[in-house]
Every structure is written in structure tokens, then in C-alpha cells.
Image 1 (spheres, rainbow over the protein chains, first blue to last red):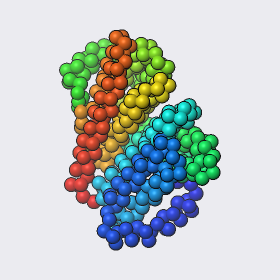
Image 2: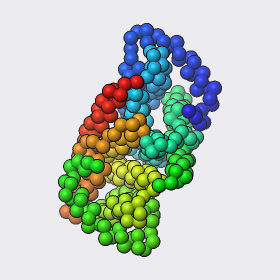
Image 3: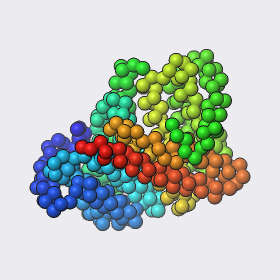
Length: 206
Length: 206
């Protein structure tokens, strides 16, 4: 799968570094689906902390939640291969986690009166959802759509970097900028995917 | 397809009533994809009017947009059957229209300080998206998921009824109640679909 703006080496490195952790989790008898659900729950908690204007606590919960989210696939592999149900659960929880991030952002913007953050949060929420929908819809019609500069990994890394700049260095503008960048990159990815799927379907004919 | 809380007779009646209109549109040389895009554009305009606290103008734009949205499939049929690209475009514009409705609602709630409407608008936005995503994802994995009490037609009818009660009889609480009902019904539909797809995938095994 393409990692867009995240360098391939970084993605691979993270995966290699997490492999021993995944084996430890399997040894403890924890299932991949449990790790998926834990990641989703931590992300929702992080989003709630963000909505309550607590950036540092939100950053910690979201960073751990994202790690759990990266681990579930490896735990599935290490325990003998994932199930179709596991893959479906993971995809659905991923969408819910994506939504939670930007719902937290929108609630924060609404309660603190940040109009730009409210707008970009809503655009990011919608476009990141549509990016995933267009891929699933394309695949249900028999054509692939894993293209564009902002797949999920890229969106989350940019969001967390912006949140870290706010939480650790008090650069709240960096967080707004990160949400803006995710909104723009997701919108571009959406357009690229719609055109990509549209072209394949057109050549397939009726 | 199931129409959930919308009686089948009403759905069928609307379809029959629109058939002559669809034939007229085809005679004018307008394509189904143009009708799809027009419907999406009208829905976005309606959502913007809603965000600007103009319920009557929003109701008119959304009602016409929804009619166009119902017509595109019939125009496609009347002009000799739809294309795969047309079906993909229609599905993607439908998701964008769904999002527009609740983005308009959330912006209205944020600017007028209605906390309950803000919350339920975000839940409705997320759950109606997930309902469509779970179906597309299930279908991409080879299992169907057209189940649950709130498919798209039901969501839009409830939303427009609430908006009409506000626009025509000044019952703003009815609009908030409609958004709440859509949020709850969509959440139930989401759970029903996740369980439905999950069960089918589990019996399919690895």
C-alpha cells in the first residue's frame, strides 16, 4: 500500500520495531481484535480530551491508540494470519477513529470559538471519510483505488505532529495548520481516487 | 432495497410519479450524470442556506435537490440503462450530499450556540457515513449489508420533515428532534449492519 507523504523507510522501520511487541502480545494470549478495539477506545478517549482543550493528555492517548492500531495487523499475522471478520472490524474501527479525531477537533473549535479550525475540521472529517468510502465502493465494483498523497497513515502522522507542536511547544497555530493540511491533502486524494476509479469503470463500459 | 421506516407504497408512488418527468428529461438530451451533479449542487446550496439560518430557502433547495437525486436513476433507466461509472458517481455524490446536510446542521448549531444540535449533528454525520461505508466494505469483501431501519431515503425524509416543521410552522425544536432521530436510527442501523456483515464473514472463515 502507498504511504503518500510518509517516507516508506519510516513506515517500514515502525513496522520492524513493533514486531517483537506484537509477538509479546500474542504470547500473552491477547487477540488482534482486542488490540483493534483497544486502539479505537484510546482514540475516542484522546478525541474527548482534545474536545475538552487538554492537548497533552490527548496527545498521549492518541499516540498510544495509534500504536495499538498499527499493532493489530501484526498481532493477527504473528498469531497465524488474520480473519475476514478481523479485517472488516479493523476497517470499521479505523473509520470511527478517523471520525473521532475530527469530531474532537470540531467540538474544540465550537467551544473555543475558532471559526477556521471548525471549517477545516469539518472538511477533514468529510474528505477523509470519502477517501475511504471511494476506495471501498470502487473495490465493491471490482476496481482498486489505493492512490493519492494522503492515505490514513499520512493523515494521522500530520495530525499528531500538529497536536504535539501545540501540546509541547504551545504552538496552537501549528495544530490548526495540521488540520488544514489534512483537509487539503484528503480533498486532493479524494479527487485523485474518484478520477482513478472513474477511468477504470469507464473503460470497463456498462 | 429496503426503505426502513419509509412505507414501501410511498417510495413506489414517488417513483411512479417521477417516471414521466424522467422521460421528459431524457427527451431534452440531459444525461443521468448531469442530473446527479445538479442534485448534489442543490443539496450543497441548501446546506449552506441552512448554515446561514435560512430554513425556508434551505427547505426549497434541499427538496428540489432530493427530487433530482431520486430522478437520476430513472433518467439512466429511461435512456437505456446506467453505466458503472454513473452508479459510482451517484454513490459518491450521495455521500457528499449526506455530509453536506449535517455539516450545514453543525455550522448552524455552532454559530447559534445550540449544543444539543451540534452533538446530534456530529453523530448523524458520522453514523450515516459509517452506515454507507460498512455496506460498501462488506460488498467489497463479498457479503451484502442492505439491512437496518434507516437507509438513506429514511434519513432524508425525516430530516426534511423536521426542517419543514421549522421553516413552515416555526417549530425549531422539531428540527433538532429530527436530527436526533436520524442520529439514533443511523447508529442502530450501523450496529445492525456491523453484526450482519460480521456474522456472514465469520461463517466464511479465514
